[in-house]
Amino acid sequence: MHPGDESCLCHGNQACVHAANERGIEEGVQMRSPIAKPYSPADKAGVRPALVYETQKVMKFESELNPLFGEQVAQKAHGEKLFACIQCGTCSGTCPVSHYMDYAPRRIIQMVREGFEQEVLTSSTIWLCASCYQCTVDCPKQIKLTDIMYALKQLAIEKHLYPKNFGVPVMAEEFYKQVAKNGRNSEGKLMINIARRTHLFDLLKYSRLGMKLFTTGRMALKEEGVEDKEQLRTLLRSVERT
Amino acid sequence: MKYLYYPGCSLKSTGKPYEESLKAVFSAIKVPLEELHDWNCCGATAYMAVNEVKSFALSARNLALAEKQGEPAENGKVQLIAPCSACYAGTLKTQRYLEENAEIRKRVERGLTAASLSYSGNVQVRHPLDVLMNDIGVERIKEAVKAPLGAKVACYYGCQIVRPYSVFDNQQVPTSLDTLVTALGGTSLDWPMKTRCCGGSLVGTIRDVGLRLNYLILKEAEKRGADLLATTCPLCQFGLECFQHEVNASFKENVRMPVAYFTQLIGLSFGIPEKELGLQRLFVPYKKASIGG
Image (spheres, each protein chain N blue to C red):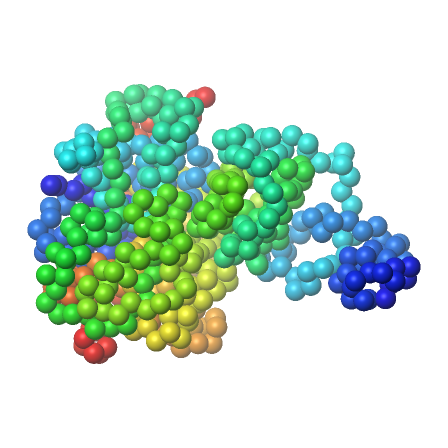
């Protein structure tokens, strides 16, 4: 039982928030909500630490937040009903990859609203989202979470806020370049370009797969493209102007 | 009635067996398919992450080309078949945003005009499963069955065929593929992974996560006694089948689960030769006889 609180229903359970706060004060550590967890590049590997209820030792001050971040994201995602979120957690519960994320979707939404710009844009969450739209379909407030994740990805790429050799944004960029140039994506070439920019060793890892695709006639090395490349480029150029 | 057909990048490379079997099946039921001339990539999930309006512009070009090339069906709309789930969901999403968002519509229309194209909204995007079940009808398919499947099939729809804009089946528990498999003489298994995400390109980018998502689907199918998985999407097929070796190595398992396109299963039950269905291109061989068909 933690001192001074005989009435607490936790009966001394170590995970109890009250108990943890008591411990924090005894250790001279100011407790913060776990959302203030600092970004660490090691987290990018995908697996979060096993201990979930860790003590947060880094403080984030109100003055360090970006109070406009929520509005910016909402605008980028076409006035999404970000602020209608009731924090029920359906999105996090239904997401097939939430257990790999540093912040599950419900928490990301709240962090966006609170202005944790740096933490959100450098989180693994936005890159783990595979766009399966389960959260979008299940959200009781009809918030298009997948589109919010897309808006966050766009912001992170615009601001170059991701580790240099991190696979997902690298793939997005390589894919983007290839399609902007040719109008089509050549899967073989895309795989090689990604491996070149991330981990060259991956090429070896995938060589078995590549050979098999090649021998079954499922991978061509020639560059695919549309016939009317000029038309496509004109189109892409003209939509960019606001 | 003629259907336009938008293959997308995957059906020309890793998803080649899908294209081959789709064409063979449509030709067997005498429904003409015509490839969309000079189609471009839909942008998939990657383009959307970099530049949204450009990703809509890409799909809008395909829609404009389809409107020009196709003939309107009874409902006044050109029927465009998109077999790849990413192309299907991406093009549907573009239509939805063009309808609902004036700013996006304005920018995309300006781009189309500059490129001497126009789109007035008269294209209906269809998944081949939708066309087969709702236009052709399960009765007509049943009549064409010569060699019933006789296999236990785990029907795997993947995510983007019903989400976010499902137009022909239930978003949580779709049933059209199960109905089809039953009509082909197979047994569709009751299982919970029907629309569970396979991770898509994660298998190539964040490998551990991608492999695990694929593993969960494969192992669940095996535990429920499936002879094979039926899929509707080239990216799901690629992850579940081509990475099966890696999944097994990573989880110390020995799952051997054939993953076939639903069009290959239709073709098999129609008695179309395996080669015409691209079955020889599968990494995990699927022999109909070996499973008691």
